[in-house]
Amino acid sequence: MTHVDGNALAGAFATTLGIEITVTVGRCRGCGSSFNLACAHVFITAMGAVMRCGHCQAVLGVIVRGFRETLVNLSGLDYISVPHL
Amino acid sequence: MARGTLLVMTPSRVRWHLGRVLSRQFETESAIRLELDVPTWPGNVAGAHLDIRLTAPDGYQASRSYSLASSGESTRVVLVIQELPGGEVSPFLVRQLAEGEEVEVQGPLGRFFVWIPAEPEQSPVQLIAGGSGVVPLFSMASAREREPKGADFRLLYSVRSPRDEFFADELAELSRTIVEIVHTRESAPGAGRPPRRLTREALAASTFPASLSPRIFVCGPTPFVEAVAGWLVELGHDPAQIRTERFGGSP
Amino acid sequence: MGVINGGFGGRHGSSDPRLPPGQTHVYDWPVLSTGPTPNVDEGRWSFTITTEDEVAHRWNWSEFQEVGVEDIVTDIHCVTHWSKLDMAWRGVPIDRLFEDVETSYDYVMVRSYGGYTTNLPLEDLLDGQAWLATEAEGEPLTPEHGGPARLLVPHLYFWKSAKWIRGMEMMPLDDPGFWEQNGYHLRGDPWREERYW
Image (cartoon, rainbow over all chains, first blue to last red; front, side, top):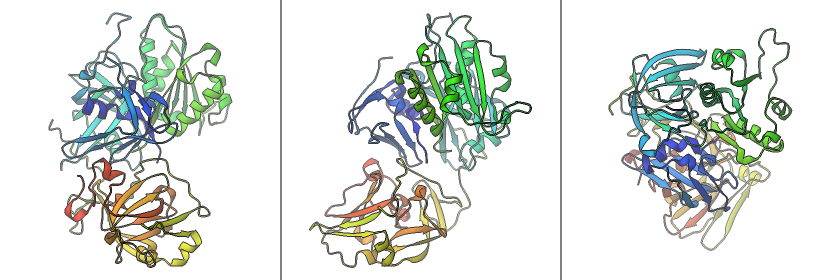
């Protein structure tokens, strides 16, 4: 199974957090690289989406859509920086 | 919209819309061109995408992202969707979604893999497409076509055979983008050259050189994008000038 | 919004009383991966059970084969609503691997090559309920389906049947693994529809 990239999560982040993920920068807690999250490696499965660092493959975050809420785990990112739009 | 005005997308403009299928036509044997009328659509920049959400009669839902072939202010949006065998959503969209049928779409989405005309445009723009990855790049080339002045554009389109090409007629008519098509499995009749997979050398021969510092957009299946991006860096392009969008994953 | 797309049915097949609630019978075998497919060749493969006194019970591939396999036909149920009935598997019963393992801990963290984890009560792994599977549907497990060996625990949702298994670590509490930390139920019994927290 191959991965896609952060572009594929634009809809999920817009709906759930009201942010545009494709211009959001994050820093990987695993290796310290900072990059535009559009470039994160994303594994989309029916259970949820897993975002990984393109440099070190550490898990940056997980998004799971449940029945009544969507869980957003960004614990693999030191921070995210969201431009004012 | 006046030339030079940026179409600004704020997150509040990203929402679910109701679209109705105006037309469906086969683009290839296994891909459909859909034109949707989306009355609440705020317009979209070139390269943007949307999510389509389908709901089965028993309430089951699935959604997938598709790039827009169209851009601008129009509330009519155009998609070209490739059927992935055994897929959950694409076979329905390609084979069953009917004219007049309603479908939920979310968007416009994406601000990274987009091209917005800007003045003055210094560096040339190189578009590199693998298979169905041509869709957002076609929207960029079409947007460029509407601008009397702007950056030099080139499109390198790697596709299996002439029968698999999307936008064949429109690409042939572009005057502001130099289009080169590489057939990897089967050549056009009388082409005079055998099919060939894209190589780093062929890539170098068909794209703006690194010395011109082009802005580069690469889109297609993940293995294609990663191979091409790697070659571009080997050829001396600055990684910061390369934007990628990977297709594939769940069908 | 109320839009129904008649004719769209996902991968749904016909219903069957053998299906747990909310499941639909499918005939293909969808692949779900949370990361790149690990590439583990049998020469480097090992499986280790670690207990609280830090004793490690380890098998390399040939030692593992010598424990002995058995054939099983069973149903599997994915939390994403698909089920495959009467699926043929071949694997080493977990009971045999635990024969010489002494532990007072009741829970297990399953660890995979590539970093995936999932947690289980030990009692869900014993008494003929679980295997380390090496073949499915008559063929050796492909890497994308978890080869060379994966856990098979068919009475729980299939995310518990960890692919690319490399070890089990005994633990005193039911600490959550990967999906369990991200919204999924700690135990995952399909017959009670234990999907989410």
